[in-house]
Length: 145
Image (cartoon, rainbow, N blue to C red; front, side):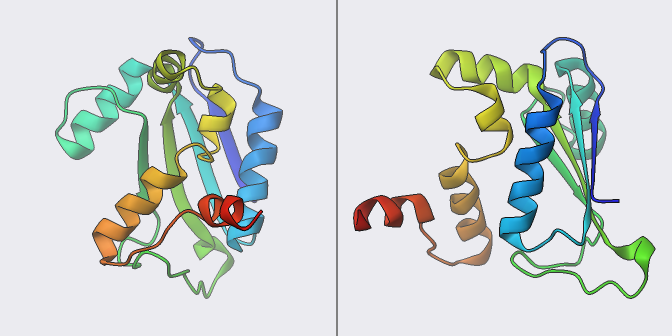
């Protein structure tokens, strides 16, 4: 199945082909191309409702993720035994919320959607949860050049 990309909002125009290609590229880089992933783009109203139901936070947000394997530790990949278990889960993108953030910070929405612009944030959160001290690869790469 690969990536299931759904656009359930009509507030922000999306380039779905580019987003799909970028998500596929990230799956390849991360070595998870054999695992299915759902990416659902929603507006503020929908992401706020989901955030309220699952996190008891009645406000819109940028990203909510729902892993298929809840017991899996960060950095570990599942070992599915059956085809129907080859699933990472779903990622809900609050594209209306993200668009407002991008406009405030003069960033491109599609680059932000692929999380390349969020690398430091993601690593900081990963480090906070795992106790590790990883640094962005882009920082190391630019220091080498």
